[in-house]
Amino acid sequence: MAVTKMNAKQLHDKIDSGQPVLLLDVRNQDDYNDWKIEGKNIQSVNIPYFEFLDENETTYKDLPKDAEIIVICAKGGSALMVAELLDEKGYKASYLEKGMLEWSQFYHPVTVADDGDMKLFQINRLAKGCLSYMVVSEGEAMIVDPNRHVEEYTSLAEKENANIVHIMDTHLHADHISGGQALANQTGARYYISSSEMQGADMSFEPLEEHTEIRFGAVRVKILTIPTPGHTPGSVSFLINDKYLLSGDTLFVGGLGRPDLGGKAKEWAQSLYETVFKKIALLPEDIIVLPAHYADIQEINEKGFVGATLGEIRRSNEIMRTENREQFTEKVAGTVGATPPNYEEIVDINRGVIKVTSDKATELEIGPNRCAVHHG
Amino acid sequence: MSIKVDVQLDCKRLSCPMPIVRTKKMMDQLEPGQVIEVQATDPGSLADIQGWAKSTGHQYLGTKQEGEVLKHYLRKASESELQEERKFPHVIQNEEFLKKLDCNEGFFLLDVREPAEYAFGHIPGAYSIPFGQLEERMNEIPKDQFIYVICRSGTRSDMAAQQLTKHGFTNVVNVVPGMSKWSGPVDHEK
Image 1 (spheres, each protein chain N blue to C red):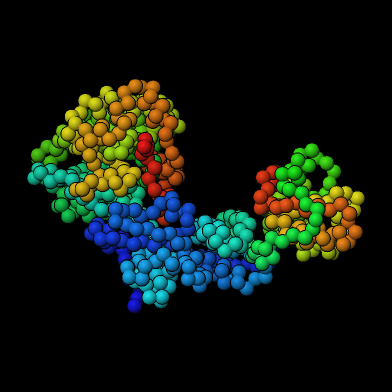
Image 2: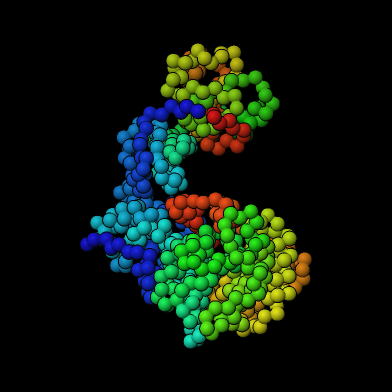
């Protein structure tokens, strides 16, 4: 017997296939509790690798001999060690080659819409709960909220025989490093973001507020920018063909964006109120909302993407029906949890104020997403 | 802050799991009570060393960062400490001792833990003589004062208190359970 090496895509395919998957995560307990691989068919066990250093049979007592055990650690080294120990004892073991490091950089594109004139992809970075989008029409592509592994987008565009011409960020991200500028440099496309998000920024961009509509492709995909402040003061949403709302971090399937990351929770909660009841309220119920994040795998629908109609979101989130301004502000500003790790540094990087190496970027981004407000 | 250690272990530029694997091997060779300094550059080693120490019962003292090098300090646990057997009759609970500390009564507080343990946190004003050096440094302790002896769990201070009594000290009290449960003020050496 030998241990089998697995990459992130192979692991995802396995999870996606619907068969039960047993993951043995050998990182320390705190890291595991903070951030782990989750999924509908996943059974996850945490036994830190150092527990295996002592010959002690009780360490193995919860592990089945007849099922494949996929061992996960931070970077792969400890998982390999544990997988080999398991293998010697007659277990069926495999391991994720570069661990959570690799998982944090894995992107999975899903087709949300394909109506002949226009194709819309949701690109899901599963480990972070980060969603970005590619809209393709007549050989041209628009990318929304790209993450920093920009080759994911260039290769997807290439597959669709499209040139990337527009790149936009719905807002200044605080939980992950934007790939917007890097992707623009590489492709020559325009990079758009709201000016109010970029105060003190050290990079060039096309101010989003100067555009009410951006069109590309012979079919004229209609894109409206709807200013939806709240999460950050210059957040926007994009309405594509009056049908798909790319809502950034303003509106999620499971709730609203957190308004506290600028240190002005109450003020921003006020503008979030304006957004929800004065702007989003005017949109039809059957619009499909596609956010930049999700907090729970339950938010992935049966078609494999994260999204729901505006009507469904209104029905399942009480906060969307809390029309009393005071109650709304109180609820939204009062229920925020832990801030995303390293968010101040990440914001500076996304403004071009500081530059970091790829290793440093990886380190800063490690961990779960914490942009959504959970209202229970 | 200088920390006296018995062994240094170089795990620089080793990635997980090697720093812990090596630390475990070295620890197996140490005598109970000895202190090891593990030098590592993997940032993940911090949480893992703490987790490992917790699961094995060894005492994690603390970590110092010098540039990119993390120096982790650990003390090997001994069997007798785990048994928690104390013989010296005069004891005071942490909480009671904290009150005495607050009203600043004249007394001498003797900390008999290893220098590394002392360096990572001790009660302000505590005097450090590691248990192993007590015999030869007894002349540093005043005979005319109340003497409170403290360690981590109350075991070493128990033995120290017995030794002091044997050498003619009269007013000796063991502070229990000791620093492991201490909630009062703490000084760190810079």
